Image (cartoon, rainbow, N blue to C red; front, side, top):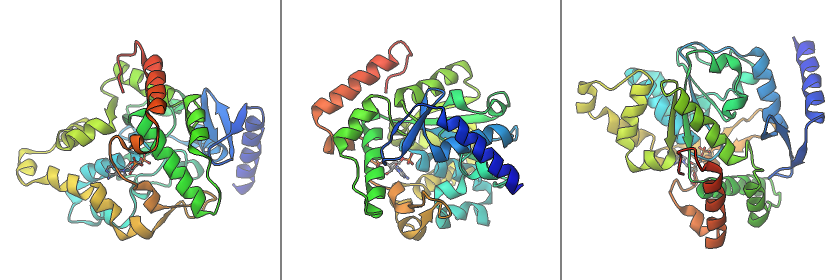
Length: 320
Ligand code: A3P
């Protein structure tokens, strides 16, 4: 098995060597694969998933571009789906494990070991763009819940995350202006951002029963309505009794920024400890606000990115 893995890794390296590449936000290489920029770690993961992963027909994927609210959506969907076991150990694992360790990533946790999941909880996640997803996911009856966010906030969140990670390793982060220029040119993790969003948007129009398209902003604005919508989409609507007992509010509170960011595991724990890209859990909880971009970008930078997004999304029916 180990020889097979080594052989696979060699094949993946050969594929990568033939791809266009640029220097990414961390100074590492990004590879252009099927129209999107990948780090080698996630590209290897994706290639492995294409070969080895088969979903259960009941699987539900939380999909997103990085820094758009993945952690929050994972917490909400996990809490909703496992709520009937509230008194058991499953739901409480959100209190002792960070959301990314409750809902495994396809191209990370499952890439190296497809059985690295709890089959009783059909909830997985991915940052892979829609057009790059394995056919086994597209053609099965799996459901997908996609989250995206204002591009300016997504960029600022990404830059702050990468910079904080770099500084924790005593590495000088890329200046904001340079990172912004790259982002506007489509170069970011799993970018171009607009193409990531558009892929899922179009698919959600074509297959509305399979793909639920949400924004961070709308979930913030009316979290209760979205928690109910998520439950309905996942096939586990709240009963009247549950609603009367305040179950929706309980889930909202448990998954709130304040609650999650103050848990010991999220303050002091680490994610992906066994890898070269281990990271402090606390970095996944920064501010959790809408519009923080204005504290980092000039109005001109903001207008430029708005203009790019407007042009790219034109005619799609989507406004972000
Ligand atoms: P900011 O950097 O703007 O604060 P992702 O989970 O996709 O990596 O996205 C991270 C963003 O979601 C960060 O945004 C983070 O603070 C915010 N976030 C994390 N947990 C949240 C929660 N429970 N509620 C709202 N926002 C949350």
